[in-house]
Image 1 (cartoon, rainbow, N blue to C red):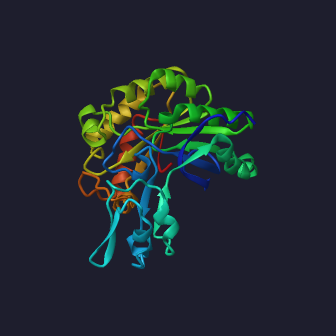
Image 2 (cartoon, rainbow, N blue to C red):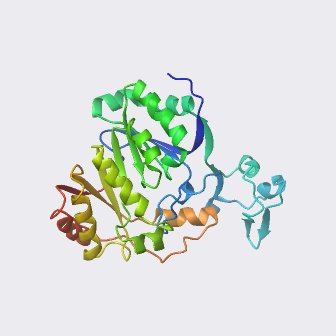
Image 3 (cartoon, rainbow, N blue to C red):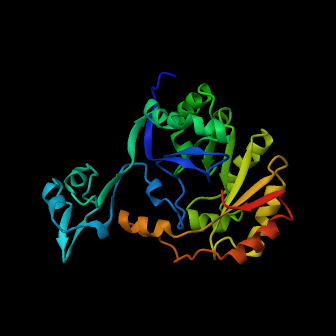
Length: 305
């Protein structure tokens, strides 16, 4: 294994994943994202710094967290303890003080060798299932030096590599990472720039250009579209997306990822609001209609990852 000089911010390592590429995989989630999708399933992934996640339903109202907070960021309000996020420095003292495990640190600095220690535990399962390692986020390319070293180490170990990306990065970084990546899971929110900017906070110009680049480089790519009712699930939006993907001659597979509401509870636990409407998950009948529309353009279309 290599020198392990790089380190980065990781917020989760999920073993035995079957929805982030082929076979049984370990998915490493890197923290930080340049997009702010209002429907984000993993809102804890957006901020680059560690954050405190609070499960009020577990709190036993003992007050130990407030007593141990040197920043005086935790105060009793009525029958519960509230945390002033502007005062909180995410030192973790309240987590150590909480006997009910109501508080959790999201995000920690890890070295390459620390990540790989977890990854290599399941090498046998990768080999038997045709799986490997997926790097997700957030946006893993935001930590491209750390990602490059992780990918390099995975290749030295003979592991299949996948990168789940928004595509929002520079061409140079994308090309650097592409040389070490066996499969890209490319999230395409919307081909309409106005819709994309409104709901993610950034234009899709760079994203679409980078998807074209990957196709030109003959990279292995699966396009994944999060289906969010009221945003990108109408026939016109889906037809445009299908036509765009069809124009990428080397991209033959497209997955639809139905919106789900797990991010709503996470936002509350992080003390945040999504700033968007109250989305509802799409129904299966509608998803099947969208699959039918897309199959007029793309060779392989399925629901799920």
